[in-house]
Length: 519
Image: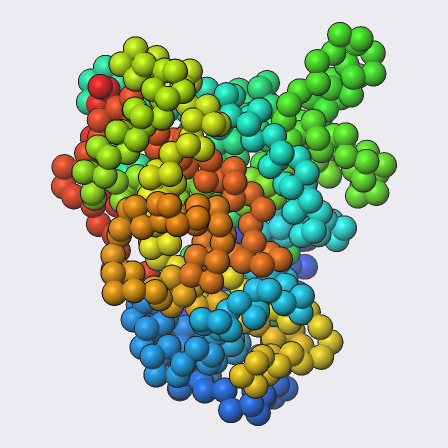
């Protein structure tokens, strides 16, 4: 099958609203294929003449994409050793500059480069989710998290812990007998979803199973429609990839169905809250992000369209930025503990000491909902170190795409030139493996008494980015990870009967069967 047929079949796989829209979509794609091919072959901008070394390649279309995808770790280590901290690599249809070591910091701390723009080029999840509000910038989302989320973490914690427990029982029931799981991720994802839902949409809507199902799965569902998931040749056409993102978001019936379910739940809840706030003198203001968004003056004034769609779009972006990633990071941390069970014993000792100091009897039989408060979790430095170390060792390679958003070139301190609209990838793997002979090994208590908690970003810890685009939601993420780990080891015994495997290649999650039983 030729390339043209492949792309047509790919587009036909989207659930279009009508045959007319399908024809329009296919015609647009066909035209764009020709334009992209012409652009790449004839008008492609030559690389800057700055003596920046480049990974050699022979395939004009794929560049080094397949070599990188086959074994990212080997690729990164080989070429970083050969070419140094800054070099270029042709992947996914375009040339990227790779920044390692101190040069990564230059990119991350500079106002000339934008993480949001760089990320959307690679995976425009906004468009794929049907979010086309040009006013909804990264700055607005960051402000929403800083303003509406972070200041209230202590207030949120009791409801979050309660819903973690509900999510656990929704998957496993009462665990009267030992339960075997093929993988931890589904359980953790449900717990994180329930906990995050009570923070984002409140006590009432978090009980809506249709809504929480979408919150749990939408990021994965959209991710599976990304051409990279299928190693599609579309990845060789960046411009066409961006068109695909927009077409999917506008024409996919799945996305329209999910948005409708969310709106059907949000609209009456928003109306009720606004009416109660205005008419009920005994109204008690809900403590959740939804209420903050409703009251936000920019949204209420209608500057971004109707309030319902504006609230939905912001909630979806918060969901994309939190639930799936936090679920993965929690699973990674737990698999590290399963791989090193003696560490669990040490964490339980710390847990007992902290609980006793706070006036709790660890042997009293109190459940996790009663004992794991915000302050209790905060006072467990050994647990925090385990989380930081687990996340540092996560398999991440060329990450944190940044784009030069200026209309002029930017020159790094070593003379390498990043042209306007040029893309930079951060060599996360290299930065995370600098600093000592044992830096590639899991040392659970490496960061105890160092002043480096799991939320503190740095050149050698880029899990949450760094600089002006560091993840503003990392405090909630780390709080959720530590709380889930604390709850599970407090109430249950769990082990991996066949061991745990951390994939030596690629960025996949660790895996292994897990048996959980109540203590």
